[in-house]
Length: 314
Image 1 (cartoon, one colour):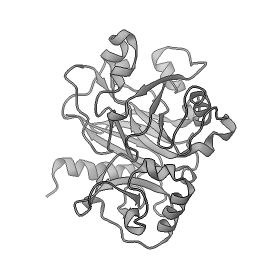
Image 2 (cartoon, one colour; image 1 turned 30 degrees about the horizontal axis):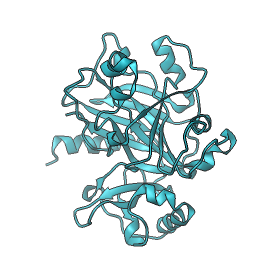
Image 3 (spheres, helix red, strand yellow; image 1 turned 135 degrees about the vertical axis):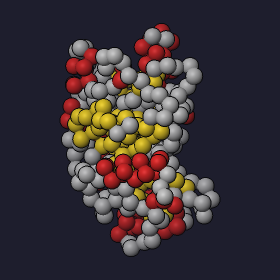
């Protein structure tokens, strides 16, 4: 008999597969743990919703964290490509625990009001320049981990986002060169405590965005060459199975290239750095009346070609 939580997870993964995906040659890098392995390992997800190929077993010289893997650049990526081409054993999904594809990045950069339709929802003008804030890396959790409601907030909200993962160090990067600095893309849930974001802390957004567990990521880092067009992907969020956000990344005001060029004027970008690119309309705070997450809710954030992350609220 399937436990209800496991049954919902399987149902959600099947739902996710309604969107077409390439189950074979896409490079879907993951960090994972398994009972028979010591500590985190790097792997390849064998298609959207598939099992995991253990990259560290294929080549024991590979690093065991994604940041170190990305720092080594083409040399480690070529090993992953060889592993993808080989017929390697696949660990069943039920036997592994997925971690966030990137943990302990140097920085998590976020972009506010970056969807045209999200601006319309708030009756605010479309920004002329990117609105940048951040989350601390300690807010990152895995794709199926729990989101913990902090006792300090009564207004915790959902936001599905496309996350860009940086693959190469750079500063003052031109927009025309920016994609050369991208490793790939993943799904993010920018969990937000609206009371702290909008009314407390001098209306600085940081504290409302960076409680522990407020940045689920995953399930995989899908390399840029495996994504047909990151700016034309269906993006949606479901709360307890009900669609609350549904849009397309073509609604982004500032695309990946512009964001990298803008942010890299101010800070050096490092391999593993994450840029959350904004959320579409449908968040709880702008509903009439407002709706916020409560204990027992389940949030599914899904992006076409990238996959689905499923987080229970506790």
